Image 1 (cartoon, rainbow over the protein chains, first blue to last red):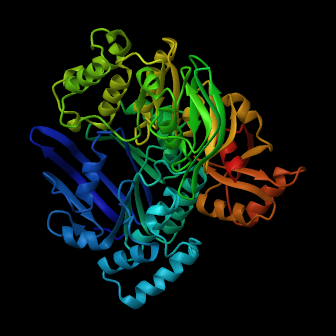
Image 2: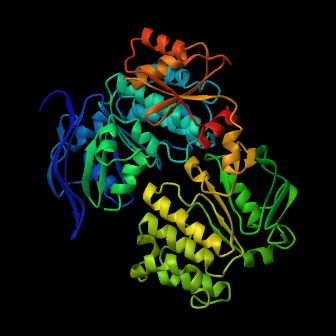
Image 3: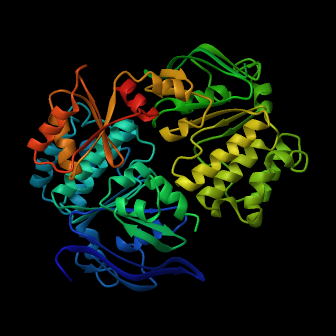
Length: 242
Length: 300
């Protein structure tokens, strides 16, 4: 595999009984790229993502993530990626510091390293006053920013973000994207799903899934040209109902 | 007035969830509460649907006081909470029948009102509610909230986590219900949905920032806004954030929305500055403010 491709997917398929949830999808993601993975509810995004992060076995096809095969090296994939979702990211009943220590430990960082990273993270996010508060007491936007930083603790090659900004206030949502840009600029690959179509415009490339298939994949600019649409929202509306 | 709140406050222990909220919703109006997670929207819904007693202030719904006449309110309103709250182990049809029976009516009696929505989920009427997709759950919840023909409909974040196509369809359904004379109070974190309401209240940290029609709200935006674009988004954002004259810098799709702190701002100067930061293909154009711009300016 070429050094610049951190995700390579070919003909990846997942069936549940007769139902084809993911239908032979093929795409690559480059190192440091912000890749937007869009689709309507039920289009198969979550199922596809689960295969890529090594927690669901594909029915057929091939996929290589962070240099490892999803069929044979799923455990190695888990060590080399970061993951956060809207639904689960941190433990509400642990403090900010405890969450960082816990996830640092899970990813096998040394105590010294955890302490070091913890101090930097808390300072960068300006959390000095709340570092000993339970995460459950913090606003959603803060939680999501902390969760993203925690997902980057072990310097993963790729971070998978499943609707990270749902319900977050508009200012924090933008701060979150500035964090994404920064991480991508430092070479981390970002794989992100969102229902905010303005966020689709922030991606380097965007794929749109419809009924289990990838029906479009290109830069936002080219997709708008291709579908003669003014915005990514229009592109989505034209495509997503099949 | 269909809904009326006067100086409503609610605190939990020491935390003020909502503070001194006053607004009215007219009969047949589609009124939006626009604000992020934690703004206090759900607390307001719970007070208006008689599930919470306010710490201070008075409120009425459909002419009934939320504290004294709570039973009458419950018969006259439909409520769709943010969290899916139907019986997961009952089928689609059983859920609907259950809610109709509780309110002393039948599905047939008010079928007119839900027909447009129900036919979309009817093919799955024997499926358990827990096994439905997100979009279908939402449609079933709306049917259950409507089955007793309420005067006022409360919808707490009905479109959160819903894709743009389904969101559009949902708002078309709301418009049709409004035409049938139902007053609707709906909350959303999506600023683009604000434009579809007759009037909106922008809410953050338990306080109302502004109440008006969507058109009037964007007119109040205090500064000219510029769309700025260049070849490298990350460097562009960094450079604009470092620029000493900036008033606000927010990414907006393919552009950055920029406002300047000076009244005699000259775009040419900014262009030269950005060029000095090695940015290419620079475009700076005046643009119209959106609800989201206004919200961020007020929330700053």
